Image (tube, rainbow, N blue to C red; front, side, top):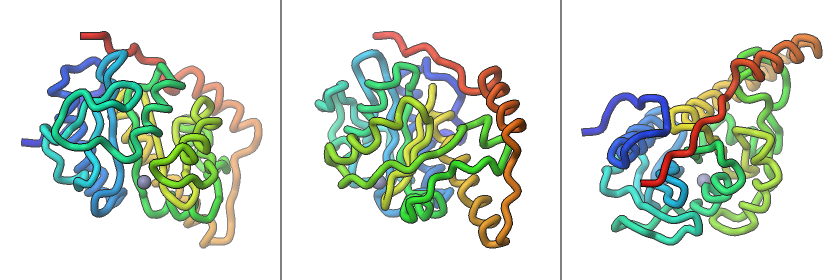
Length: 232
Ligand SMILES: [Zn+2]
């Protein structure tokens, strides 16, 4: 039975993480953020092991036993299936950001449209978006599953928690799986609102002073650094 909710926090048992990954996979599918076998989700299990969704399986119908365990070099340590084809991108984020314990990759249609147009989500249109994500840049195109893709993402990982991948999709990450998923939802929502303002032909941007106040609030209330799950 797949749980309906994901509790916040990264300090969970392996079984809880497996259940959460299946739940998040179903949410990604139900939100229309992935189709067919698209997308991938991972969670940092401890300092040397990552739990990842398998390749070639609908993220909406994964079972807990489908989840694969890999080390930080991508070698499979457990599980019957092959790990996600975009595993190298997830591992890059974990190596560069010790504060990150979960990564989500999906193809939400509106944000992916911006990625395909090469347009970043960097306009100060929504106060809550500035607090939640700052801005969402576009990484240049890289062939999926290759070092081209990780090289394109790498310079942006430190400064951002959500990245549009040109001609491809979106990657988000956070201190726990719930945060990574919420950032995917927020990125798609922002893309939809941006598109509506463009259809209306008018955008009233927040002033520089307003953005400064929001960035100060982001520093106070924004993403908190979370502990890395302990070895077990
Ligand atoms: Zn993809």
